[in-house]
Image 1 (spheres, each protein chain N blue to C red):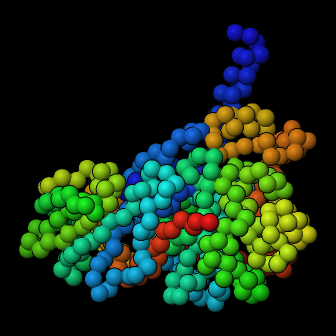
Image 2: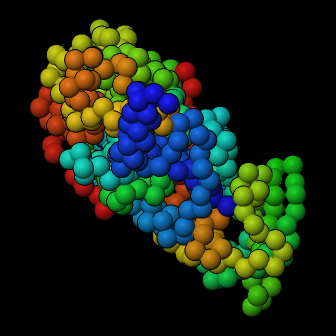
Image 3: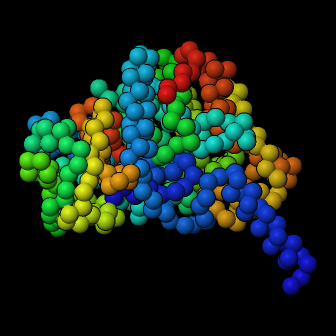
Length: 266
Length: 146
């Protein structure tokens, strides 16, 4: 065994441990592991779903950003793990969002009820909702009912840490902000144009500090994590920019795309 | 049996709750996951139907016993009975849900009433959610196709 390969193996092993600390356990390409949900977790998910429906009703908004705390990201200074677009559909609420397929390298769009949105045994049973500016709500509402338009900028290739200024992969929050661009700006027809609009409106991604061992471990162990879309100079400086819920919530305030401040539901 | 994949959010596991739909006059037209996703094997699990039950059966019972397990073209039907008076309910589960559940004749299921419906469990493990009208408004699962 060469010293180099031994070093590489050790790095991979350490990286795997770090990756496990960064994300919940799952292996590259592995299908979903079956596990039973408990009566108690579903009871809590249903309670949060109903509380959220009441809070969304009370907001008077038709379209909001809705975030959940799916996993503990406090080590990265983050509270919310995932955003969807919640919208009123008659007397009920629907959430349009992008979901990764059980750790695989692809994802798709789903329209779900609030119950399904919170049935994922989250880290915390709480949600954040941000009403969008009325003009943006009006632009989004027909899009959210129109599968073809909602899918316009959807890229199935998925990376949990997709670079916000590339088109190689697309993670969930990235689909959301690019779709906001599509709705808000008639000149946007593709991802490149959407990203240009996001720059223009001062969207700023979160920069995660992920060292080389963490990156290597994550890439080796998980099909839904890739770093090859990040510029080399940033990647090798351990700076991984990606679209987080927090960065989106900050941006909509900064860009005048929000109506009021976000509220928490528990 | 409710099957939930362990994967980092945002993942499809949110879609996998075994749900039951009340059929009848109060049936919510748009409720419940009705389209098994092609996204993953585990996501083919979500649908159970409550075919028939006296109105007060679920609200009044804390424990039901499985008295029959029947295969049908649509899935598997469990016939549930309340010990105190013999009142019965029929629950239809998708094949995937039924396969994952270790339910045989004689199995005791617990029923927990919540504001949005009822939770059928085996011990602490959930088998199916039976929504009432409030709960049905919270349920929907649909893959958005291009």
